Image 1: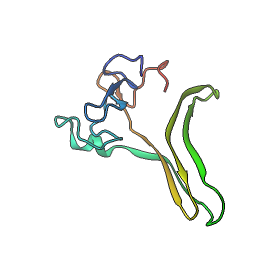
Image 2 (image 1 turned 120 degrees about the vertical axis):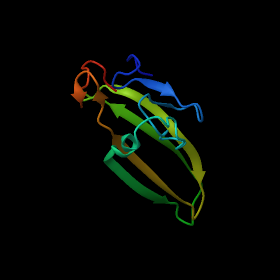
Image 3 (image 1 turned 90 degrees about the vertical axis):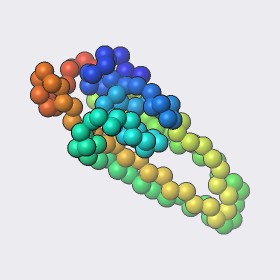
Image 4 (image 1 turned 120 degrees about the horizontal axis):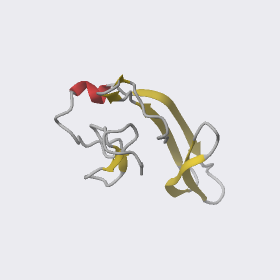
Length: 126
């Protein structure tokens, strides 16, 4: 969770629907996709840009034993230091099974009323 104060870039809160930690500025929860704030301008939800999107498929051959898998997400800063590590999902695949994994990173410009669009307080990194 963020150390930032409410209203600062990177400040977080818990989604009241799914209990996932999300950005405080979020209008729609990225996990459960519920609307969180109806008082926010409609354009706020549409300002996001997908900066990274990766998708891949794994197919288990028809023969052979089961495969187990763990989906691990790691976030690192510009110095290579690990900021966060989470196991996002686990499971097993049997002969002929197929799984598709997708990862996307959305970025949204912040709007600090005191300093204008894109103003971010240095020192708070996520």
